[in-house]
Amino acid sequence: MTARTMIIALLALLAACSPQKLNEDMLAQHTPDALIRQANADIDRLVAEGRLALEPPATLAGYRADNSIDERPSAVISFQGAADERGRYTLVTLHYLESHGKYLFDSVEVSKRRNSAFDFPLFRLSDGSPLGWLFAALGIAALLTSLTAAILAARTEGLGGKWLWVIGSLATFGSFSAGWSSGSFGIGIGLQLLGFGATAQIGGAEWIVSFGLPLIAILFLLLRSAGRLGAKAAS
Image: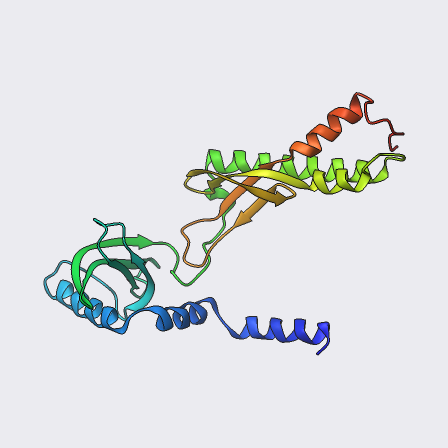
């Protein structure tokens, strides 16, 4: 199989598989049947008691094992109802303690969402928070700095370790992220290229913008401007 044929087959597969279908298949494979039955029974009970309003049909939207509660085996399972008249979705998250293969109901959380748990979050410029805009600007600045330094390094005649400078200029260090609409802030460690990123996850509440520090690119530009590279600068 040629590379072109493989690419066409991959694109066809991605087109045939919607995010909802992929998510539902994964959840169906990894969520214990006993937990699904127990959760459905508890949802019916909560609705009958008037403690929960959920537009049918309720669709399995998430599952994870969680051992953070008093070091006891536990599980968290989520269901999503159909969209209401305002286009919002109700997400019900149930917490369970596991004991001898049985799941004991612990608590329930209910939230309203603008987007489905099976879709990528919408991106609107008007939703941008001050921190989201700031991080986007810093990310674009990091991207431009990396590209400028890499291009100048590649065009500098007689530069020692030229391609190390080029590759190093494209690399950035650390990860500073912010929620586009919420402004939630996070710091991570790592190595990335070009210093700017925008990511979203299926079922996520918002887009995340992030940037890294182009330290080697900045060092190269400082040394170049000071004439300390021992090379003929590019025009």
